[in-house]
Structure formats: C-alpha cells, structure tokens
Length: 334
Image (cartoon, rainbow, N blue to C red; front, side):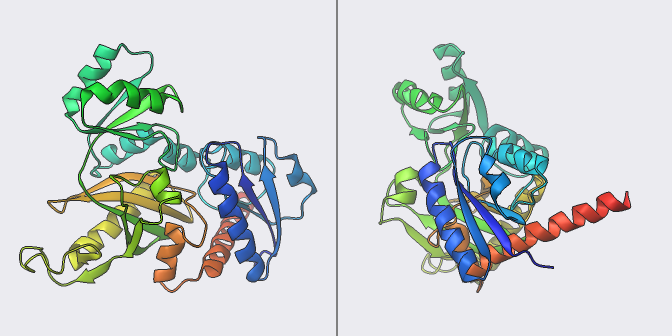
C-alpha cells in the first residue's frame, strides 16, 4: 500500500519560519512531481485547525525549531491519528534539546566536545568559573534552537557577556561547549543507513546562519574515500578537503548511525560532527528535520547516493506510512 494524499506542514511559529517555508515549498513541488496529491498548510499557531478540512494520509513535517522539531506538532498529529514523517515525540524532544542530546551521547560512550550548561539566573562570576574550567575558546549555544541562531565563539572572556546576551534571547539556558578546531562533517541517515558524507567549508569561522543561508562562498563537498590512512603518508597531498581514509570514513558513518539510534530517531535525520587535527571525531547534534530544499545537506547527500530530491521526499512519505501501518497492526494484535 502506498499513500496518495499528503499535506505539507511549513512556516511555523519559530525563529526558523523563513527557512521552513523554503523547505515546505520545495517538498510540495517534489511530491507533486512524484505523483502525490499535495496540499500545503502555512502553520501560524499550535492548533492547525486546517488539518481537519484537508484530505491527507500522511503529514510531511517541514517545520523547523519550536513546534516542529521539539515533539509538539508530533504530539498534535498523534492525537489526531495522522501519520507523519520523521521521528516520534520523544526522539524529537531529545534531539531538539542540545543538553539532553549531549547527555545521551555521554551515557552511550559517544565522543562529544566537553560542555557545561549555565542559566541566566547565575551570577556572572559563577558562569565565568564554570566556563574557565573548560578553557577558552568555547562555543555558546542556545539549548533549544536551530539553524545556528544565537551561537557565538568566545575566545576572550571579556566578550562573554555579549555572547551570553545573544544566546539568552532564545531561552534561559545556554550550552557552553569546548571549541574544537577541525573539519565540519555531516552524515545523512535514511532508513537506518548512512548516506555519503558531506564536508561543509564555510568562508567564515564557523557554519553560522549567514553561512548556511546567505553566503554564496560556503562550499559543500562530497567526501571521497582514499586508501591512504594518514596525511603524513600521503605527504599531506591527498588528505586535503574532500578526502577521508576508508577507515575514518566508515567510523564517521557508524558514529552517525549510533547517534541516530541512541536518540531513538526514525526514518531519517542528519548528524553533524567535527574531525579535529588528530583525526578524532566529535558528535555535535542530530537534526530530526533538517533543511529540505534541493540545496540542503540531506538532499545533497541523497543525491550523492543516487537518490533524486523527488525520490527522497517520496521515500520519506512511504516510510511514515509504513511505520503507521506497523503501529496499527501491533495495536490490533495486542
């Protein structure tokens, strides 16, 4: 059985609304090209009453951030009995919460940069003490936000207050993470399999909001495998940007799969990590609803695996529908 009617949820009420609209429109076009009957809802509140008037067998969630990736819209759809794409309520909550994600990684023995959490209710001296235990530089991240909004790299303690003020605009709690200098890698997961690795090479210091969505200088390179196991053996000629040794490539893919599974993600995700100068991999986060334009990272990885954007969207809808059928059958049997 395959679904025919899909409703695409986009827009939303988070700071990532503009990106979500781009994702949703791209998905709607791709699904229509694949032969689905598609309708779209520009989500502007947390009730989505329009759902009651739409023909739908599956909801494709193209919402980012709050009430998109945090389990809120997933809970609403479950209450309405509507199958939906991507991870369930609990996995969505975990992945959206950077502190909860990091704690899960540590408990599972997966390497991630050292970190502490601070709140806006702490005294500045106490914050500084916690941060200096990590050692500068550090990265400040709002705990529940996406698209690198509100993130700062702090190299001088005198700039801490400015960075904290920026991060606290998006919540009372901030993740402080030890800065790791290295290559930025991302691994897409589809149907519990790792897709080809993509390396992100921003023209600025880190992959911030502008680098993601505005700066045309940002490079996205499909990483190729090389049989050479170290840059030293290759005379540092082959292990430049865009290449990884076979063993390290496999390790990055396996690490991404572990992160996806540890959080209980379903269907698809995108796992971000860093590779430092000693070839050590560090997990950063798992995106349960990554960008869905044809230029976004998950679609780029799928394309490298021979999966077109339209086929990717169709596969994600099919996975959601089949997962719902399994759940119904299990309920009947019980």
